[in-house]
Image 1: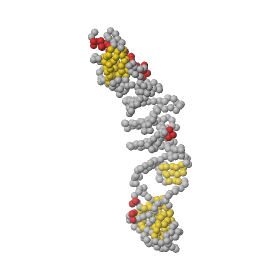
Image 2 (image 1 turned 90 degrees about the vertical axis):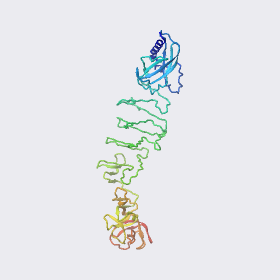
Image 3 (image 1 turned 45 degrees about the vertical axis):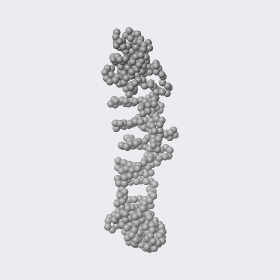
Image 4 (image 1 turned 180 degrees about the horizontal axis):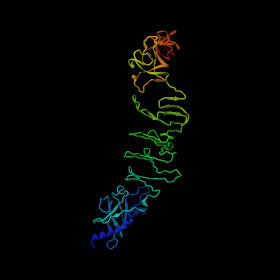
Length: 464
C-alpha cells in the first residue's frame, strides 16, 4: 500500500469518528487541549473536533499531522466558505482540534453545511461530511442566556426571507397572570428598551389587542425610579416625524375617542406647542379643528365626559357660553374701511361716517357733526365685521359703544367727568357739548377731565 493510500485510509477512518463527535463536544464538557473560559468570559468562537487516525491496517498513529478543515454549503463542488488548518498532535490515534480561523457566525448561521478534510498534501476526501446539530440545539433550552460584549453587533441576529414570514415570534401562554410576550430593556439613559423600524416604508411597530379595556400600545414613564429622558420632556408616548404626523389617533367606535388625554394629578391633560407664523391663510395654528358634519360642534366644554355642557362652539362658528364671556378690552367695535390711508389715522381719533364711500369712516372736521359714529379703538373687547385675515387695508376698529381712550379738546370749555361730548372743530377730537346739544351729535360721556388744551381721556361711547 502506497503512502497516499495510507493517508486516504487514515482520513476515512477519521471521518467515521468525526461524524460522531463534531458538534457534540461543546455539550459534553471542556475540549481536551483547550482551557475552560473564565466564568465571566464569552464563549469561544470555535467548533471543537475530535477524531482517531489509523493506518490502513487499523493501527493507531502517533505524531503530528497538518489537517485542513473547510466548510462548504454543498456536498460537492461550490465555493469554500471558510477554513482552518491546524498542526494536530496525535496520541495513540486520538486527536483533538478545533475549527477557528474565519469560520465565524457570519458563515455558520443556521444553514446546512458540509465539512471537508484534507490531511497533509493529500487531496480533499470525498464525500464531504454533513454537519448535524447537537440534539438539544434544535431549540434553545428554557432559561438559556446569551451574554457577550460585542459593541454595535447583535448577540442574536434573526432573519427570515420568506414572503409572509416572521423574524421573531414569541408568546406568553398563561391566560390568567400578568405576563409579557417580549421584554426589551436598556440600562443607558440614551438607550432604547425596544427599537423598531421599517426600511421599506411600512409600519415600524404595530400593536393589537382583543381586550377593549386595554390599550394596544402602552407607554409609561416612572419618574420615581429614574424615569426616561426624552430630551427635556419625559413622555409616556412620543411621536416624531419629518414626513407625516408625529402622533395620529383613530377610533372607529362612537363610544371612544381618537385621542384621549387625562391627568390624574391635577396637572395639564393636554398641551400643544407651535412656532409657526401665517398671517394670510391661517393654515398652521397650534390647534386645527375639523368638523365634517354641518350639524356638529367644533369644541365642547363640560364638567365630565358626556356630562353637563357649559359652553360649545358649533360648526357655523357660533359660540354658546352659560356664564357669558369676558374680555380684557372695554368696548364693542366694528371693523370699518377708512377714507384715504390707514396710516393717516391713530387710536383715539373721533370718526364720522364718510360722505364719499359706503361703509367707511373719516376724521371728524367740524363741531356738532350729526354723522359722528365712534372712536378709533385701541383694544376692543369684541370686534365685529372683521375679515378672517390680518390685512390692515381691511380698515380699522371703530368703537361704537363702551369705554375707550379718546382725543379731546377744551375749545368749548373745560371737560369734567360726566359731561356730554360732541365732535370738535379740531380734526379728530371731541369737546364739551354744553347745554342742549343738537340731537344725533352726542358721542358719549367723559369719564375723565381736561382743564385746558388737548389730551386723551377715557370716554363712554353712547351715541345719541
